[in-house]
Every structure is written in structure tokens, then in C-alpha cells.
Image 1 (spheres, rainbow, N blue to C red):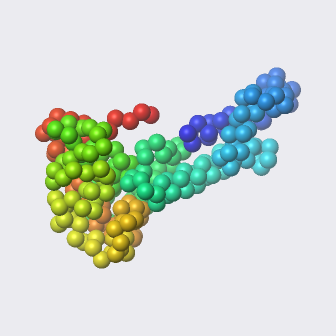
Image 2 (tube, rainbow, N blue to C red):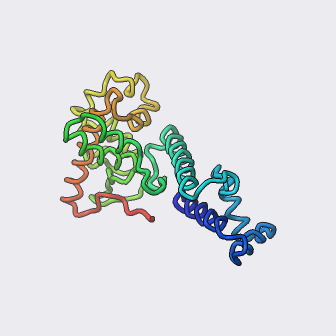
Image 3 (spheres, rainbow, N blue to C red):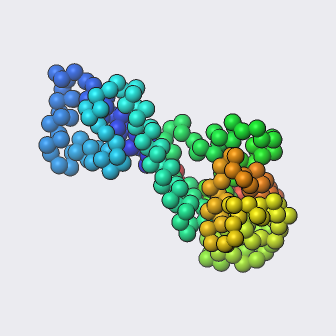
Length: 236
């Protein structure tokens, strides 16, 4: 959605920059007085996302584009953080970032002096946060049933990511370095959210990367043998 909002904002900006004598600009300006037109609806869309219109800031198109991207990035980051802090186990794939603004964890990880293995594990960490790894099955097949079975230990689970990262006995060895860290904490409630919100430089970040990599590796192995899909099929 953020990408569409960006395109709407830039389309409006280009129309505002046309000469006053231009036919399309004149029609666009007059359309603001008619409810239900694209001009009115797009203006309302900008308002809902907290974006200014080009005449309100009086700058060049390039500067305006930077402001739009910065605002959309802030809104998306806030929404993603709120979802991670909620009862949901992971960030929905539908959380869209504006063009060229990838999740900060990828950029930040590249700036830290980490080994090759943790850097590669960032991909697994992101796949867990997005919730697209298929970590459960029913009869060896991916299923949307409420109660499914863990691909690693075979236990019946309803929250696959929570189970894999916090409870699954198959990954106990890789979970040990996290015990005692601030993110692990003393309370089970909120533990997954704390782990998934770790950033490069935080205590336990590399440990959670390696745990995520092991979960990812097991999922790849399991579905390679079963001939099923490793990642959930998602609509764009």
C-alpha cells in the first residue's frame, strides 16, 4: 500500500508543477471542488498517511520525493513494530516498505563486523519475521488446520514460530546462548517479540541469527524430502 501511496503523491506533485495554462492542471485543480473525484480522493489519501501536498511545502520534486519516502518509511516501521509487539507471532508479509527502503536489520547487519555465517543467517531471520517459512505439517503436507505438527519434533502446535524459536526440543542446543540475555528475559510472554526485534549490536543478536538459521535449515531439509513448498504462497 505504501508504494501505491508514494505513486499517488508523486503523480499529484507532477500535476502541480505543470504550467498554469496546462489543460490537465486546470482540470485537476477544479476537480478538488467535486467530491468523489481522483483529485479529492488522492488528497484524502495523503492526509490519512500524514503526507503533505507539494504546494504545502513549496519545494522541488526531488526534495518532495525524499520527504514522501521518509514519511512512508516511518509509518511502515511504526506499523511493523506495533505488529511485532502484539500477540501475533511474526510480521505479516503484507507489511510493505517503500521502494529502496529495505528493513533496517539488513542494512545494519552489513555494517557490523560479523562472521559470514551470521550474515547469511540474516536471510533466515527475515524469513521468520515475515512468517513465510512452513514450519508445520499434517500428514507430511503443508496445512492451514488450526492444530498442526512441528516438522522438527512432531508436537502438535498452533503457533509455529513461537514453538520453533522458544519451545521446540530439536533446537535446544542452539537456544542455550540466548538464555540469560535481556531479550530472553524471565517471562515467556513477549519473549518471541523481543527476540524478533533484536538489531545488530544487541546482546544475543548473533545467537538468535544462528537459531533462526537452524530452524530455516531444518525446514529446507524437511520439505526437500517431502516434496512440499518451503515458503508459503502469498498474494502480492
